Amino acid sequence: MDKSKQLFLKSKRSFRKRLPPIQSGDRIDYRNMSLISRFISEQGKILSRRVNRLTLKQQRLITIAIKQARILSSLPFLNNEKQF
Image (cartoon, rainbow, N blue to C red; front, side, top):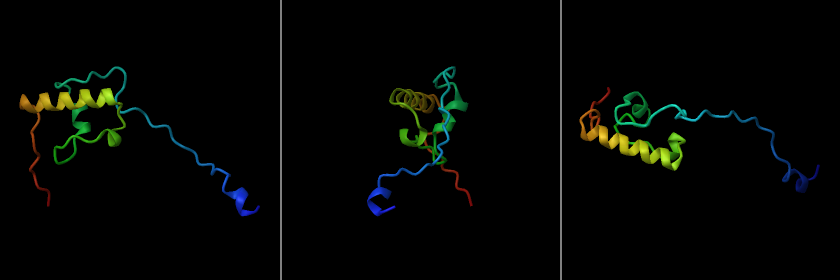
């Protein structure tokens, strides 16, 4: 094959379908700490939507839930524990 035809051929890679991080039955709530803790980094920061693979609406609800949990002292604002 000459070079001009090689450019148009797509590589056949198999893609694994990723499961959504939030199932349809999960409630996004400030009391659901097991769900909220998956979307916080080790430093205590809220992970971005691109990293979480969430929709815009889900990311907004997660952010509100995390902020409510921080205000009610269920979740720390910062995680200052240094690991050596």
